[in-house]
Image (cartoon, rainbow, N blue to C red; front, side, top):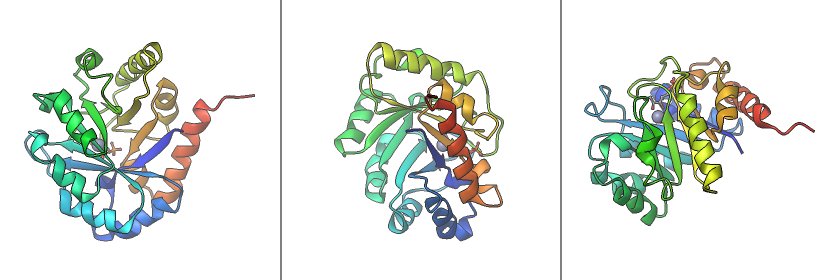
Length: 224
Ligand code: DX5
Ligand code: ZN
């Protein structure tokens, strides 16, 4: 089932609990949490204590996207904080296969993220290990950027690899997702679609999440 993952980065942090409840009651099942260190990306966001506080107030699946140098140092902290899935950037991991296996060894889903300039071919030797691949559709670091359409070709390529090799990994997309492109992204093969500004920037985040979910699911529904 195609899922919309509201990205907390775009929420009002002074009203975080209330905003999370708004999307939770609208029927989403996963939340996306962007961790930025000011080194791998130019921005700083939040870390394990904030995620632990979120985990304490919701049963939603917490999808943690690590935009940090040397993520291996922090995997256990994010597991303890309540992450259900953890993704690391291919560009930050010297021993990517090991990092993914450490995440899985903790009983969490392990994902690998590729920046817009990183080719799908860089994943060839871990594709059978990953639980999901996250294709960045903007350069990571900030919410509210413009979607890069070319990145959908990578989603299509991953979808073909998945069918050809009969693999079960999920495909996630992150950055600039709106009501105008969510259908194309779902049709290209995305299962998990992250939406920050287009959910929490909307007047009614719950209604916005619901609308995006409906458009994405309709795009891939089998018509009879
Ligand atoms: C960007 C983050 C995204 C961000 C998406 O580096 O990884 O998850 O929150 O925000 P929007 O949907 O506003 O592009
Ligand atoms: Zn993200």
